[in-house]
Amino acid sequence: MKKNSYILILIILLTGCDSKKPDNRNYVLYKGQMRRAYHEFGCDEKVPQIKNLKHTFVIIVDTSLKARNFVSYDETYERDQSIELDTFSLSSMTENWEKLSIKQKIKRLHDVKKQSAIRADSIHRINNQGQQQVWIINNSNDTVIIPMQDWLYICVLQAKAKNGKWYPVEYWRFSHCGNSYYDKNLFPKTANSFIMTLPKNGNFKTRLRYKLLGKKKYYFSNEFDGKINEYSFIENPKDYDSIRGEAKPHFKLEKFINREKKHNTKLK
Image (cartoon, rainbow, N blue to C red; front, side, top):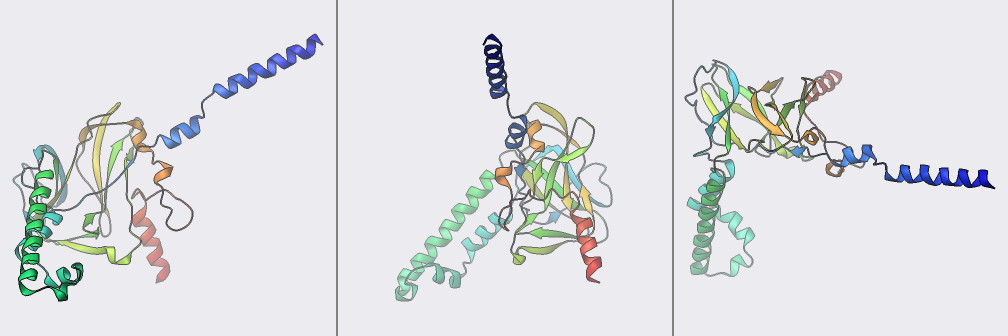
């Protein structure tokens, strides 16, 4: 009887220890803090005055170059609409447009153009609050072709881990609509840019860089300092792409070009 009591106590103790032990696998899995990449491009302009700029295609992250007059695609669109509105789109968006009088249509046109101007000013203010401006510069004599998605650069932020290797801390959410994609021609001696907020808060100080998808190769920016949370290397499964059945991680641009090359080779 005493022996059975000892066995019972031992089982209770072992069970109690197991119940308190954290499930490290799930803890790490759902602690993933990798963020979605989003890099809207601005307007093409002249090459900025940057010292020691190489005569090639480069991505420059100079932490001293903050956004002061960045003009995004969204702002440009709203600004254009505030000057010359597409009346066909306006009529399709306005209920009973055909029943409005000329005076009512003119007022509606004026109101929508005014709203577009307000939105353009608001976008400009939001995009110029000291964010980091990342320059994409074609300082070569050749046109460089860059794939785009929905007016966005297909580009992710990478960080150097403790083992000295580079890993993504952003994932890219590809569109399932074929109309989302097109090629942007960046002509010789021109530049473009996008803005970002530099990662400054985290428990891991490291080096960062950008990885941009090109037509036949990847392009990398220079390295710069930043702070991230170590869980930024992990994508949260709750954010997985589940549009086509089984939920799967998003692309990190790790082997995307190689995969496309193999696919194209099979088609030939």
